[in-house]
Image 1 (cartoon, rainbow, N blue to C red):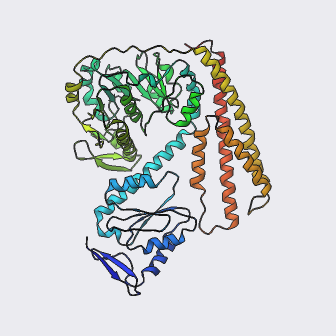
Image 2 (image 1 turned 90 degrees about the vertical axis):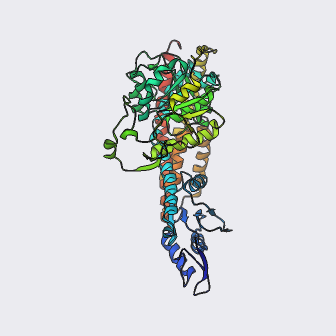
Image 3 (image 1 turned 30 degrees about the vertical axis):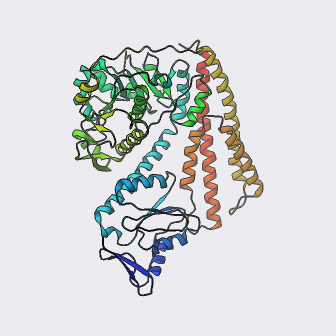
Length: 560
């Protein structure tokens, strides 16, 4: 890079890199003011590619009167900036930029991307890497937000109707360090098919965990896993399991897993929590110690966390392609399996990522978020362990050593595994059931109070007469109701659902440029009306599932 610091015609400093001027040769500050006027957006997080000598950043900062955060990616120049609210990312590789963005941008941020003049021309490779990092971060947040919104309606029903099973199943804490034999995690990627014969030959030498719908491919090939992990609450996930009969595998499930899946498996199962709110709520109804399990965006991520807890021995991952190997989405006999040609008819956001053998492979952003979840989990759970990616295809999972599956078998799976006796539950199920019924009835009373509070708050909004401000009397009453709502909901399982509603309120009701008092009032009015209405709807729906569970427990003669 050739960097030349120059003086503009008006005496201000300008800069030229590789013969490209990054600011005006004549009046950099005037140019910057015009640039900021065009590109600045109120109440957005501004992500700027290119600092130069700071004229554009200073102009944007002057417009950030509501404290809007500005993040600057500067790939070429060592700089410092003492302006409040300005964060400088000095990086020029995709991974470095992505890691920095993960720390600085959250899912509630509305991001405004700005490219400083001529920064896209200096070095096209560096520019493309920066865009890739930005795109992957924002799409990852989009996937997370979409997932939360999609499951927000489903998880309360699944969670409540699964609570009955913790009366007979055990917490996964009972599986911690249960084995010292090798564990193989089978996922449903296309490359699983070529590992089937080897898997059959050494089945008695390993502990086999199936990730979700992978069980269909395994059972079709007369391979019964020791454990099946399931976390998905959708009807589609239930459809993967509903025709399974006589399977002796043990189900390990999150409490928001589809509630009909548990009864398909006759053997006792194991449950776990996926967030602190769920863990706290479950602990109210179980004397067992409930375990929080780190995961990610796929069931295989949870299976990986489980494997690191369950065995002190080596771990192999197979079928974890995270890419469209052989132009397929999944292994044969997986009900999700589609050809890439069929998939291209309904979507077009494909990307190329580094492959298992060092080549480029075709993937998408959903697979990318799964891959990154594996990489993050491995850093926190598996770096000191013998963990191998034996997929032999698909994407490279950074940090996890590649090893052909047959070599893994020869080194670590030569001897039959020991039969581990599964202990019976050591608590009184009948007493636990009565305790649960009493707790759920108390929770139902809280739900009734919350419903009245939401209805009162909605009515208060309607009573406000002004179109520019809320009266002090109404604000005081709303604040009083909000305090009661916060206190009451904290004692229920509604917290997680309310968090998603609050996230949407924070993200989609931010002030707009040049708002009038009437505009501001209307925005805040709509924001609060949405909050109360959505929370009321969620509470009413969840109360129905709560009462369904209470009625079932009261008529159930005994817990098997």
